[in-house]
Every structure is written in C-alpha cells, then in structure tokens.
Image 1 (cartoon, helix red, strand yellow):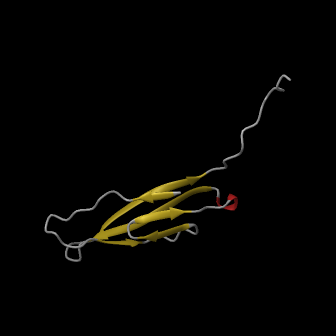
Image 2 (image 1 turned 180 degrees about the horizontal axis):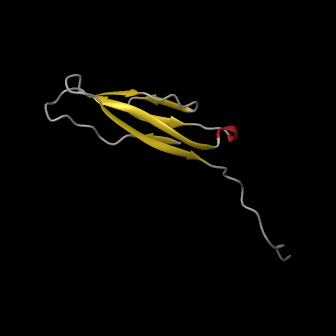
Amino acid sequence: MTYILPSRTDVDGDTITLTQTSNSPFVSFSAFVYTMSPTIAQLGPYTVSFTLSDGINAAVPFSFTINVVVNTPPTFSTALAD
C-alpha cells in the first residue's frame, strides 16, 4: 500500500522538510511517499509520526494510525449448484 502525503506549502516559500519520528517495522518513506508492506505477523494498530519544518519556525508534529488486519480470501457458505 502506498500513501502520498497531501501537498505542503509555506507562505514564505521556504523549503519544507519532513522527518519521520516513529519507527514502524514495515513502513518506508521517500520523497513525501509512504510505502507500507506489513506481514500477517504484524497485525494491529501502528502509529506513524513525523514532523514538518521550514527550518525557521518550530517543527509541526503530525501522525496517522495504520490498522493492519487480516485480508482472507472469500468463501462460499452454501454449495454451488451444478
């Protein structure tokens, strides 16, 4: 699964830096894009946290929660007619 962060702007035109502050075992981050590849052993909620900074003002924290659930294949509850 891939999540692209919403656009970021700074009213002064300063460059915005994103820094991941949490360590999630299945999340990788590059160029404002998070890629998540959890395994079945990693079920449950995980909080991903980071800060946005323009290098001048205080960094702004932001986080979101990923809830990893089992995605089992569909099954039939009744037999199919021939």
